[in-house]
Image 1 (cartoon, rainbow, N blue to C red):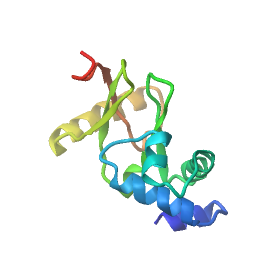
Image 2: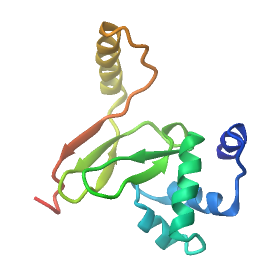
Image 3: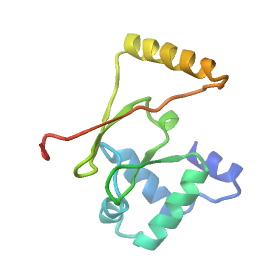
Image 4: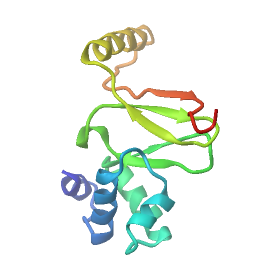
Length: 137
């Protein structure tokens, strides 16, 4: 699936990109570039940034913007599962969470109604809950 997305955008699925995707697949939550480089020693930091940008443009990777100086990265949701994020305003940490199918359906209805009210064609949603994690409180 990642290879197909890269090919559509005129890119190759190189060894470094494969290593980054594999590391993201194994990560329990969105991770920083420094964390990725730590688990993929064959990928230097500058290469990681360049390759993540290519993967992001190909819709294989999603960047999670936090309140600190370091973005976190994860595989696109359609390559994993639909989920949301708890984002700590203090440390920038990100934790994934899922909602029950019933609650997700209600949320989708509310968001669709909001989008419709603004004449906006919604096809997906992301929910980031901002607050303070237990380590920082």
